[in-house]
Length: 399
Image 1 (tube, one colour):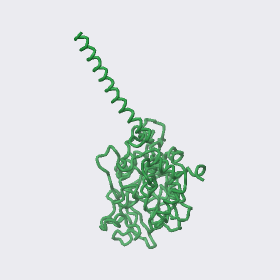
Image 2 (image 1 turned 30 degrees about the horizontal axis):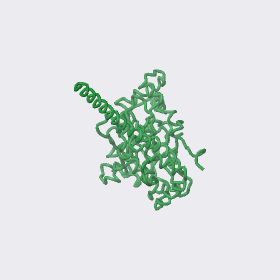
Image 3 (image 1 turned 60 degrees about the vertical axis):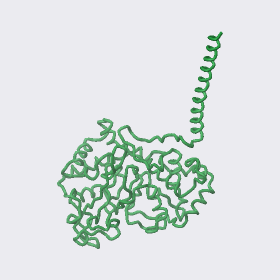
């Protein structure tokens, strides 16, 4: 009898133990399911539109990518209600068909004020460690987005002092109210200027371009993806004689780059000998490069080398849009700097004392110029400029 009681007691204890462990297991998994349902702690991972050979960009910890945030950012990027005239949006200077440039020599704000610089492409902007042409201090898209919206010198969107007006207008729009709540779940007041810039920045980071014919040739082994002329042009581009690759190398064809496989950000600015107004290296006073920030003479005329991806679509070229075609751009580098024979900006750029050591000039035949242009044209990513996920959503969705 004692043995039977002992056996029954052990059996009961064993059963209780199983029930206890099962309860813990169910409790843990129920918590996970509830968290996923409420999206409070576990957000679905953002799916980058990247080929396997491409590293992911580095994303700020306080603004992780989510599909809802990117979609909200797309609506805001194309939103003309964020300009003082109601006529312009971010997309006015960054058109998808032109690889998110505008085709103008200089950008023009919503009040018709002219910007001193050419609109830069936003292709692969997530891989840029510094933003705009010449500001080494501007490193986050969230901060940069404030400049066109609220900047006054020059006026771009013209919304300075209208912060509360923007918030009220978004609050009154049922679709935006729902989209902000979805993108910033759990926040009591999701419609803020801070969240607006986070959404726009997220959309801009989603603008990735790695599917040009050259990418398919170089990284996917499609031998016939580019022409023989483009292949010859690639060799010229990467030659020590032409030096192009020093400033326009790597996955984004720029020597300013950051991504998850780099231990540190690579940042560079160059004076290409575009001007030499006083024979002492001066540039036009509203475009002196990073000297405007550092105040150091050696930084006169130093600008960031932009990506060459989709370069055939982003004319005119240089920080001030003063070179109209790819052929003229090659001629500039061939001469080792530009000579302006008359006018207020006259000077011999090749003699600029602050010019980069990579800009020495080179010999090149007409046939080789054509090959080089053919290579540059092979960097055009048709998927990038037609991808519906990057397009204007307003024409059929918002009232």
